[in-house]
Image (tube, rainbow, N blue to C red):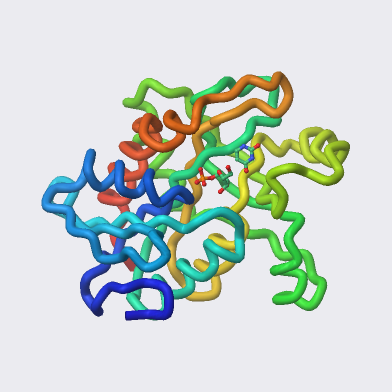
Amino acid sequence: MSTHIGAEPGEIAPRVLLPGDPLRAQWIADTYLDGATEYNRVRNMLGYTGTYRGTPISVQGSGMGQPSLSIYANELFRDYDVRQIVRVGSCGALSADLDLRDIVLGMTASTDSAMNKLRFHGLDYAPAADFALLEATWRASSSRGARTVVGQLFSSDSFYPPRPELTTLLKEHGVLAIEMEASALYTLAAQYDRQALSVCTVSDHIVNGTQTSSEDRERTFSDMVEMALDAMLEVPVE
Ligand SMILES: O=P(O)(O)O[C@H]1O[C@H](CO)[C@@H](O)[C@H]1O
Ligand SMILES: O=c1cc[nH]c(=O)[nH]1
């Protein structure tokens, strides 16, 4: 057991899908994994291991925001020797070219969080995705129905932004969508020399105000999960 994950050593696979919502983790395990067993219920942050096309895969909820994700990513990398993490999340679109249910593969993730300012003594570090996972997911997207784009995410500490005018600035600098975890995931993967990617489905549109339901966010974002699973199987664990 680690501090926040109740699994025994060896119960978590080297490849992990990491949605923010623990009930999305349960849905992914029920829908895609053969022989899935629950290894974590601590704080109801559900985690499961099963197989996908014969390869062991785990799926673990991360909670919302970089502090919560960092607890799970640290423990997965450090205590369970996880090699690949693909976040399968939801995001708010900034780009007018994006529609609800489009998918963004986060090549980079800027942030307003102070976590990396502390870590890098004020330097501006550029958290980036693992190229092999990004490229494999991009290829896997071509056989799915959802439109997929590669580009910049912004990982915000605030779901309700205290300074909404800053989203305009981000948009003007090419940021496609806002979510709340990718920056910390990429930074921790770099620290532990592991592979990570954030794949996010547009759940709401910050510019035009349209949105999906909470039930949709929990259990209907299948395209991103399928492309992430296909990509993980293609990329050897390092
Ligand atoms: O759907 P998940 O993966 O939780 O991701 C997004 O949704 C939450 C906010 O509603 C934040 O965690 C954000 O990053
Ligand atoms: O963090 C998030 C996730 C979805 N939609 C948003 O606007 N922000």
